[in-house]
Length: 201
Image 1 (cartoon, rainbow, N blue to C red):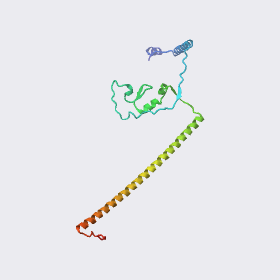
Image 2: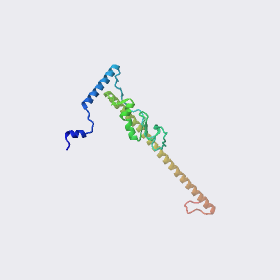
Image 3: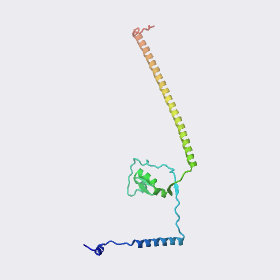
Image 4: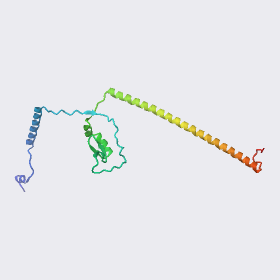
C-alpha cells in the first residue's frame, strides 16, 4: 500500500489557496471603487418606467396558412416565424412569441421594468364606473339590435304572407279562366256542358 506521502505525489490536481484568491478579489474591488470615486463616474442605476398596458393588438393571424419561400438572402424579418423588431429576433410559434413579448428581456428593451403601478382606491372606483357604463351601453345596443332583428322577422313574415295570398289569387284566376275556356269550347262543339248544373244560354 502507498503511504500518505506517496499518494500526494500521484495526485496531479492543482491545489488553489482560496483565502489568497479571495483577498485578491477584495483588493481588485476596492481599487475599482477608488478609481470610480476619483473619476467621479459613479454609474447611476437605470430608471425604468412601470409596466404599461399594451395599446395595440398583437398580430398573430396575418401569416396564418400562408407559404413563404425563404432563401439565403431573405431578410430576418421576413423569415418563417414571428419577428420582434424591438429585440431583433425571430420566434418560431405564436405561444413563444407571446411569452417573448410579455417577458423581461423584451420589456427591458422597451424601457420598462416588470413592476406594475399600484392603483389607488379612486382609480379602482373610476375603472368600475367606466366598465359599468360600457356594460350598460352594450346592453342598450343589444336591445336595439334584438328589436331590429324582431322587426325584420315580422316584415319578412308579412311579405311571405302577402306573396302567399297573391299566389292564391293567381291560382283562382287561372282556374276561373280554365272554366270559361271549357264552357266556350263546349258551346262551339255543340255540347250543353260537361255535366254541370249551370244552364247554358
